[in-house]
Length: 213
Image (cartoon, rainbow, N blue to C red):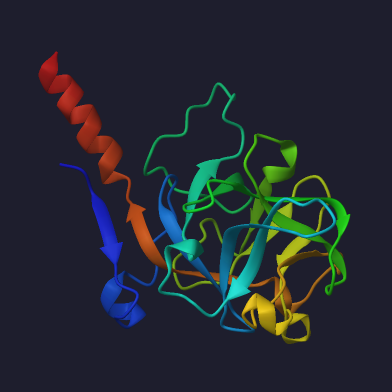
């Protein structure tokens, strides 16, 4: 039986999922910005200038599907197969695939409008600009514990801050950008909610295959 777990957006975190639960591949996760309490989000709308790729933002609308991201392995062509439910480790290179815009969290060399760094977009094609290193303390990033997303190509970090509020027509959301600062509290994101799969999912699938044999 598949080991899927759904934890509610409306329950206290401690009631919804174990505080030390590790992140796993192919889970759908919401990331809350520790400093501003906004969520890593994207839209099917595009930037009006710069790259003209799909918009990302730090949103207060935690209840919407636009703040859900699927955790995918960074190197899908690697000989080392990553299975659904395998644990993400600190230092892993991942991709974040947006549930509604069908794009990857992406950065490149276009400068951001408000933050000191580069644009972060949702990009609907495979590209090395979609790769992010998970930076965290210990061996595994866990739900409820801060982590940082460092862009592999540009070495910048996914960030937002209170000074990055977008115009009213953008809904009062905050700009998401890839910070060129070497350190800062604006880098910290906390996995808080979503749909996740644990390692038992892979064990269940292997047991089923053995029974068929």
